[in-house]
Length: 172
Image 1 (cartoon, rainbow, N blue to C red):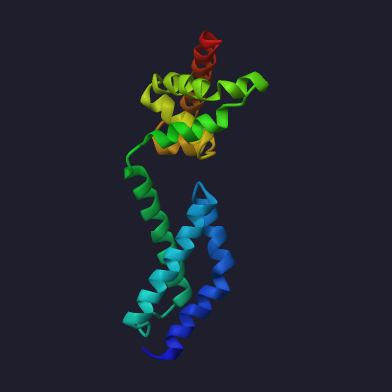
Image 2: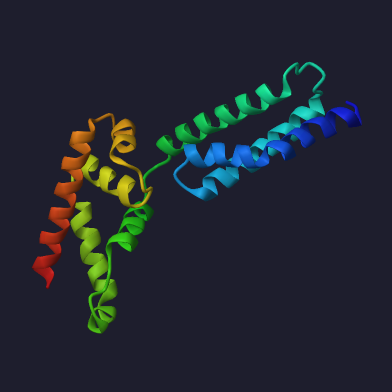
């Protein structure tokens, strides 16, 4: 490997850094995921440099092919990752808004109650709620992830919010 090949990929990465960041931002739910993917791309380029880049005819096409593959791998990892209580906590943070100073005192109790109400939702209804409020996805994106129509996504969200409102009203 020559110093020229190492600097070639590094220089290309540097030139395309902003474009790559925008590319990942459009394809991930969170800015920190995009940053992680940019870093992972750089690490892969470094590994490629070690094995030699002489056989890469179109480095820019190679760069974006690796980027596209990283997005696919990220999506697969995210789908396969086990759902934890963290997703409910993320939704709770977004939905919970104290009404007055007295609400601050019983905030933990209200969170626990809302978590109980959300836990009673059907899995797809809960997933739609989480994807909409935690991941800030639109109806179409949620429908694609859950393999349902956008109309069903809307129904699930309306149902979830109604159940949350009714469930919390019982506690007040």
